[in-house]
Length: 70
Image (tube, rainbow, N blue to C red; front, side, top):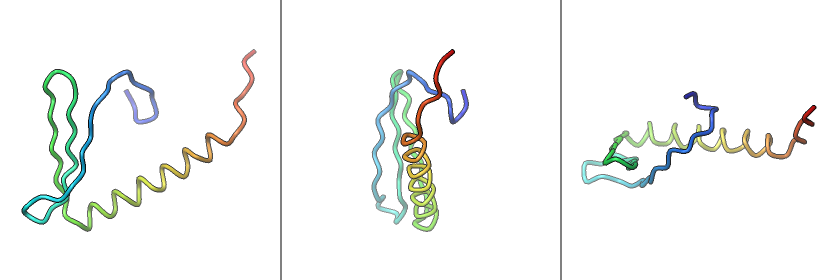
């Protein structure tokens, strides 16, 4: 599976500060998978910028007409 491939896998995500001054992205999925990812504040801001940029590209892609099937 690549980043641009759709998936049926569902997961919950939580984002917040830790008591150690880090930013945690916590991902939980079926089967007991739990993935806590900790980032320093600068890394978290870089991730936020990447999310904003990806959202903008996705928004622009959604505005384009879909190719017709033959």
